[in-house]
Image 1: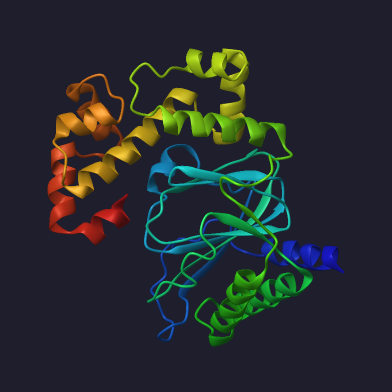
Image 2: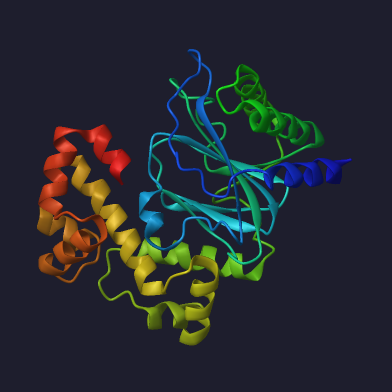
Length: 302
């Protein structure tokens, strides 16, 4: 029976439009209910967080990811954990997140929504949860209604509420920092590399050569894995993580620009400013002024 809901879910997911024009639907839920629900499939023809889009994965929406095929790694802030087929993971609002997986061989379902209160605080943080036959069938029914009536349907909202409640009660989960190693060797390698990069992000001497040597692989192998799993080069990934951390430090308002550049591993303030403008279209000082003037708008623009 477990495989039947997965087959049905995939059949339904195939009917979803590949790239909805509206990525942030207007919240339409009742108080205490999810609203602005958007359901999308992600697969080899609809990539997940490609290229520079990783820097934008920071917003006020909840993100529920359900894996049907191909294990991956979900990185939330500076923590990470594997998310295996048959598991789901919930990312809370205003958490930097991105995914590491084989972009050419996967099938995931992603549900994003908004809520006017923090839902199930702490219990679903930084973990992936087993999808049972019951939660699978809840998701199938929710998608059937969504395809017929859209995300604003009361029944879609009620099914999502029930799905989240069931996931919250499920004890079988993989928690970041305490989980067993990933079964996919590439995911396992990436988890180790990602942790190493986050730990040494402020070190300007961090390099591809050093990462390859530390993890016992050749530079060419490292480049190939990054290209296949992330669609970018290792240096670009490191730069994006540094700029993401720089945005966080700038928003805190506690650091001078030179201190932010130093703490994020840039060799000089000029290199930091140039990279920041190339990635965001603004200088660090412009970003800082805008973030102070309108913090929520600035979070959305990332």
